[in-house]
Image: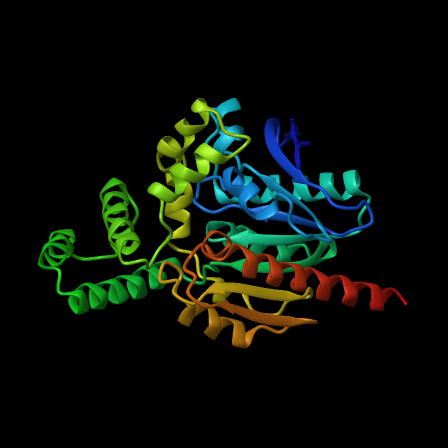
Length: 323
């Protein structure tokens, strides 16, 4: 017996190209949340089913594959994104969703690299934004990498694994002052070690398992996982100079952070320190025990609960303002 699909897929012309959207709908009157994936260039719509299928949810949520990532890249292989292009794409997508769902404002959830785009969007376009939810929040990528490296070095030293210590020594100085292929290779080596010590998102067996189980993935959808970084090199170069603190901390919309307690890929010491300076109509920081850079995978149920609570708080605040 076939079960009814929990989602709908579509391609929408955004920024002059066909871009992929994945919808998990609740009731029409419920608010809408847009999920902005990380990377750059690493779509996360493939594991949306893990969080969204059969979940008790009182909001609609839409995942999309950015220019240069996932199913959007497969239809537009010549497109090479930069930050300004993706910001324009994001604005178009939000305007499209407002019209499609009949909403005045849309909630924005940014994960990892998506938190860079998400933060910039809500600071620049509060008129379209119900709330901002930052997960694996990026504050300063260079400082993130430097802090994460120190945490990894301490973990390897504590574990006493001589082989891993030699690997770290061969990697040498990190992070490098500019992003190129050498820096990319070093970042990959660091991520592999961080994953081993459960200090960063696991892009090994976990991703393969989720890809196999995902109802929207086929064989050709593996290709963007391999090409993602090379296609998005310009974004990585731009990201290396990013510092959210320089963009201010005064928000005109509610701000909620959902952070994994063990995240050292975007270390929580940096994001919590910045969050303390945030001025917003409403704000709350949720720390998920035992979770790392991807709490939506590490602790699905707690992640669902805190996202749901965040959207409820923002919606309640919006409705009280209309009275």
